[in-house]
Amino acid sequence: MKTKIVFLTLLSIVFVSCSSLSEKSKPECFIKRAALDVGSGSTKMKVANVDTCKNQISEILFDDSVNIEFKESLAKSSRNVLGKRIYDKALKELSILKEKALALGATEINGVATSAFRKADNGRIFIKEISQKLGLTIKVISNDQEAQLAYWGAVDRLSLEEDEAVVWDIGGGSMQMISKDKEEFPTYLGEMASVGFKEMIISKLQNKSVSKINSPNPLGPITSLEAVKKAKDFAAKDVNEKMKSIISDRKVIGVGGVHYYSIRNQVGSDEYSSEDIDLALQKRSNLSDKEIDSKYASTEISNLALVTGYMKALNIKKVKAIKVNLADALLVKPTRVF
Image (cartoon, rainbow, N blue to C red):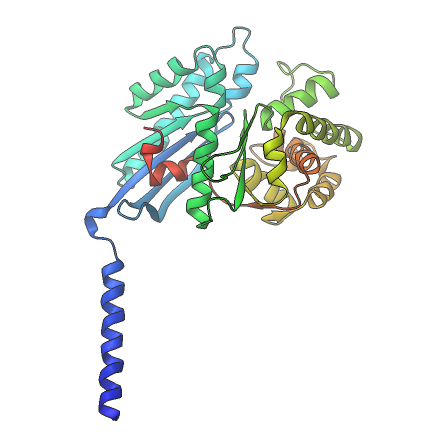
């Protein structure tokens, strides 16, 4: 009897081991890819080992961002174009990122460019010239494509049910909220975002010129409250009824730099309520850019006002911030865009 039990135990171990081995992808399934998220305020790059048979990232090899102020450069242009100074900076920074990707063994480098390039009269020509000069593949995508990439990046990362969450992405020049409802993708595509909201504070609340002033800081407690009200009122009018009806009942996943780096770091948690943000805003509203000590200092405090204003207007109880940007979805499946 004991011999039979031992035999059956060994047999089950062998079966489990063989099953585990069969689940592993073959070496030819793996490829090293790099993906660029060329945003309006910052450019992100990720390099990863990707399992193309399972359509999943197996290992992140590199993940970093650089500050290239496309949106601010465009705001200062009297002709609504991206000029030579920002072109030269972009060329230099993207060249450095490309070399890092190649050094890590990336055989594919794909990228997407977002809001600033949609708005600039020379946006598509600008990114095409840089792409050709550096031998990169970067495509200007629509606001709707931007929303869907953020959505799939979050769903892939968290293994969520497709209709379980709303993904909220805030960039330098645009904002997206997206979910899935049966075969549809309810979406909010907003033009109020990190840099634009900061510029609104400077021009409307502080009565200063954005062509001369880059930062609203220190914001101060009174202007902070006014900024929250502006964001709340704008969200109440601008967000469509479909999104309003579902967002308060679903998990809200915050992706992109505003949620993961700005709000998360200032609040001190990757999950936050509007009350948590209000407290951080109250504590930090008198800080200058120097005291904030961040390469994105000019938008840090205004980001708090923007996010809490939207949360109040839409009755969002909590946001869970995760480290996902448009590059994640591109790494897994470039055919979503290309």
